[in-house]
Length: 109
Length: 115
Image 1: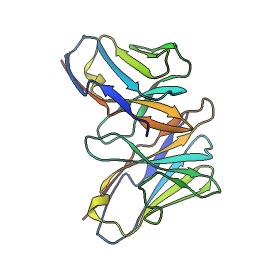
Image 2: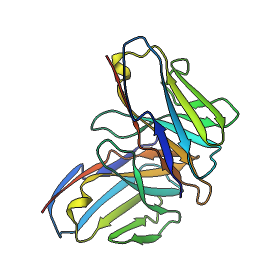
Image 3: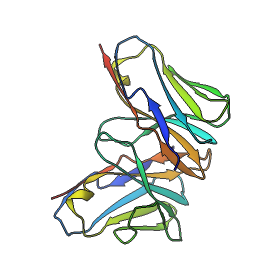
Image 4: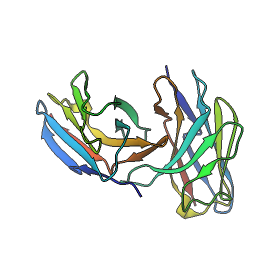
């Protein structure tokens, strides 16, 4: 079946630093999405990408849909303590979402 | 907009009992909803796709007789875990498919603990 490889698995950074995480897949997706999940909560949509090559920003977040449609990255600039959480990429195909394993972000003040 | 609620947020039950979890889209109609399960430190795994007015479609390995899904209206889907066992303890999350754009919006999740 389709699988997404998300890396890194975890990150420990200092407040103010930039963060980058990515997802790769062996399959093509029509849509890539990035979600953030806080402990005990459901995922919250951060950015949705609908077109190969698309680069989209949402505040300090920037994400790109790879040209091959098999990968995507998410950058967070100037991290702050509230960025702490687990970030998931998800590829959408056939109406279903396939999630990456998640990147756990810790930010030290 | 695009708010999805779940009830209850937490439930503790005895082994052998059945538990019903509700998923509601509060400000939009959703012909399609999804149910996921998430174990600690793991990703979300799709259990089933719930379609209003028709039978749910289950993912491979998910027992349809154990996880009963009913999508009786355009704003409500329910998941019933029948004869729950401790191994069913997990975080259950629903999502509702919006149409503009075609994106899934997630509920806050339900923590099920089976004793």
